[in-house]
Image (cartoon, rainbow, N blue to C red):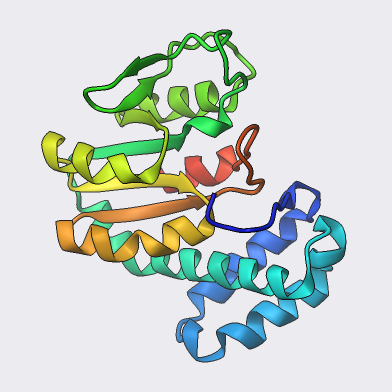
Length: 204
């Protein structure tokens, strides 16, 4: 978990995420990134609703804007890819113990969802992605993703993770010549993390 603080954006109005996308589409994001992030934090009272420090809230929103801006930048090349995979965080599973029937393959290494709980976020996301003919990997961490990408010959990927992790993944993906799209977590932590299925559907 890269951030040294926990956050839960699920109490934030949906209009917040719409404004994030609009800011990202405006271009030249980095020139006024801090100002735009500060404005959004104040407007939507991010620090008050999430309980995080004002400075941490600005950092979080800056990272979110960067992820959305990168999605815009890489969208054309992503759309031209032929072989794509979706990487989901294992911490978004409903259960983190034996009740989860996902199969772990250490050779990959990743979990394969076996659809044991209808209300499991990973199960729901897996079904959506597979219906669009994506391969899906439920990963214990980002370090195993480059190995999977190289060995299986993917040229496009969608990653679900903390916005900070997604931001840091840009350079490694560029080095592998892989076009990516990022879906930021709306709630972080070591278990019961959350992300928006509607955002995943839109990117797919």
